[in-house]
Each structure stands twice: as C-alpha cells, then as structure tokens.
Length: 399
Image (cartoon, rainbow, N blue to C red; front, side, top):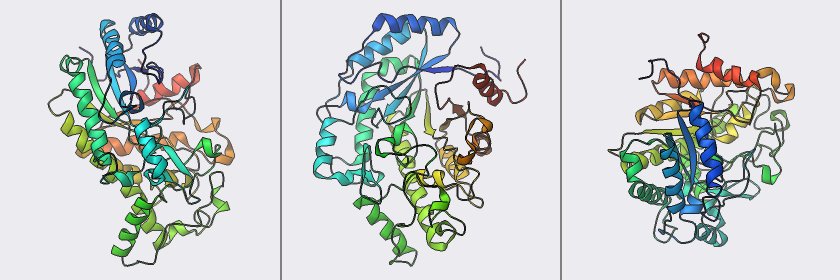
C-alpha cells in the first residue's frame, strides 16, 4: 500500500506506438523500454487510442487487434494503463512525430461539407477534429457527432473488457478537441501560427454561426454577429481592436460573445463526459480531461491567447473555476500541462506566466474537490525542469 501522500508517476508512450496502418511495430524494443520503466518504479503508462486508426476505413467497423497486442504486453510487464480516447488528428502539436488523420470516411464527408470542421473568420478549416457544432447533427451515415464518440468507446469497452475487469486499465482520458485537449484549435502551426501569437477564434463554421445567432437573439441582440476585429494568428493583443486597451472584449457585446464561445466548448465537454460515464458505468476506473496550458499573454489584461482557445479567463471572470466546477459534477480528473515551465524561461514579449497559470488552475480544481494530474508541455531532459515538476507535486519540499 502506498502512503496517503504518495504521488504516482506516469509515462506517455510514443504517439505512433501503433502506426497509421494499425500495425504494432518494434515489439521487442518496446518490451525493453517497458521493463526499464517498471525497474524505475513507474506506476503506469499512458497511450493514445486513435479513432483514425481503429475506425479508419469504414463507419462502425473497428479493428482492435494491434491495440490488444499492445495492452497484453503492458500487462505482462506488470504496468497499469491510462487510455486516451483520441478523437483528433495526430501531427498538429509541437513534438508530434508522424501523422494519423481522422477516419477516411469522415474526411470524405468533410470533402463535400467542410463546415464539419472548426473554421476561422477567413474561412480556413481545421481538419484535425470535428466542430462542436456537430454534436446533435445527423451527418455521419445516420449518426450524430456525440454518437460517433459513444459508439467508439462502447466498442473499446466490449473489446477490452478483460483489461478493464482486471483493473489493468485505470483511467480513461477523453480527447475533447485540438491535440486531445479541451480547447479550440486557435493556434494552428499548419496555417502559420508561431509563438507567441494570440491565435484566432474558431467558430465560423455554419453550425456554430447559427448557434451564436440563436444565443444573441435570446439575449435581445439579434443584430450582433461574431467578432470581426480580433486580428490574426500572429498578432499581439495591442494589434487588435478586440483585445487592445479598452477593447471589444470589455464591452457588453464582447462579453456576450466570450461567454457563449466558452460555454459552448464546456457544454460539449459536459455532454461527452456524460456519454463516457454511461459507456463505462460499472468499471472501476477514473475519467479525465486534459486542459491546455495557454501561458502566453497571461500577464496581459486581455489574456488573449486563452480567450481564443476558449478559456474565458480575465480579471473579473475565472474561467478555470467554472471548468473545474463542471468537472467536479462528474468526479473527473483535470490533467494539465506546462508544469515544467518557469516564468523567467519565457520571452518577455510573450507576457507569459506559466507558474501563475498552474497555480490558478490547480487552486480552482482543489477548491472544487477534484484531482489534478499534470505533464510537461515539451520534451525536457534537464534537472531544473524536473525540480520544477517536483516542486508542484511537493510544494512543502521533498523528504
């Protein structure tokens, strides 16, 4: 038995441990690595379970053979497993090696109806995950967006029941959006975004535009439209009317939009977690959601990069507390990133504050009595970053 203050350690397996062709490669090399992890007293490993691989070719045809072989090997090495339901494309994030797109049959639908994808004001589509506006739209061979996620997870439960029943799988993390994180794809490298750009709002597909019109009309402003003054990916807040001093974000119109933009994302998460809870009811495991560490422009009054990502977090509106309260209703763990970062490591122009951001998110989660997990945002191999991670885990010091 571990002591009450024990902090478990998890290690993420390579993103393409099962490749895009649904083949489990380099078996013996991975077995050697798993043995090394076990010898180092690592508690569990974490692995992405890619929608684009399992249901890649035809709707409702799931092929779990490679993942069953992988899970069997993990079990043989006496390690526990956290499984990430990855409903997004691999290859869009910093450090991603290789590409695993959405299922081909989904992309075929997108070829004739590109509004299934998140869209910026200039009409550029993000083809790495489905728009939240599709949750209740029957566009996928008779199924709604939420039903796609439900059916995939039901198939996972049916095909991995032995690993679930034995307790080998301890956690299901639900990949909610861009890069598996609860956020909009506001900072898209494949469209030219570079750090520390503020990013762009991603709600201009026809489904989300219609939802905003309904929301604005209900608030008594049927003539209000989505923002047209929020700049482009690599702008700074002061480059824009929306995020600048006395900007649109401070007006009634701006506040209504930001509240809607954040709410519609969190409502999506709420529905997906409800679905996940229903699928895994009776299983002894935890549910988790990954929240992104958008630390740049945190010291700017507008928190512009957080706002475009869907986190309505400004001086008089604690967006992470609202999120934590929603997760607490599901007893859902909040997994967070960027804990290895320190303020002085960031460029001054970015007005970044990862340490304050981590403190805010963790405090909000603990106030709502939910567990927090965390990971590094980048690959780091230096002692200083590990010390920072330890500091977060053991704020009163290490004995």
